[in-house]
Length: 115
Length: 115
Image (cartoon, rainbow over all chains, first blue to last red; front, side, top):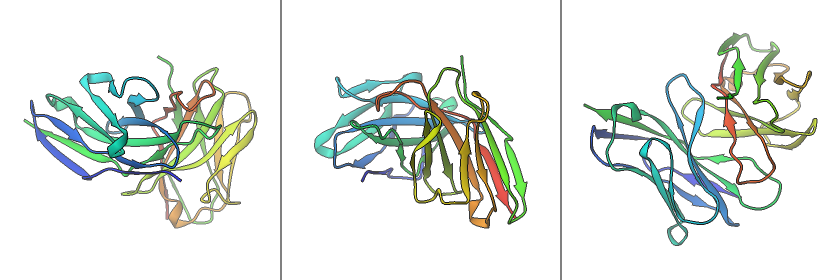
């Protein structure tokens, strides 16, 4: 079984400040990891994903995340927040093998960016 | 850019009524999913569908739920007799190719309110 924990249901930062959204996972098999973003009244949009290769993954809108197996973490960062980053962010995990493609999500973190 | 669409965006229904939520996946995609998010809770997997049959379903997906791909473009979720606890945001997703590394593309969701 897999699970995802996102620490902090609400994170508030100032414009230009570092964004750090935390995600820890539990998985009995090597996982693939995803970050999705949901802007108001829109669907879930993929920000980035880790499947194989480099553990530091770059995504859209200046976000990146690092897969740390020893810490079972996949935290999302952005050096400088922009007002347009205000949204809800979801971390998700999926088994790397087999034919089971369902995503297991965390509860989400609402990011607020203050001017 | 191709996108997943869902209709209606909002639906209000009385307990015990049947509802059908509609989704148009990305053309040429082969794998289809329904997820739901009860207010304040995680996004949860309901069902996956491939090659005109259910490939996996969660324990939430009981006999009250059914899915169908009636015409090669639409993908529907039917709830036969809605309960209050079915109130949630329902997301449709599609995936083009086999493989856990492939991205699932989500629609904007249908917000269902059961009174």
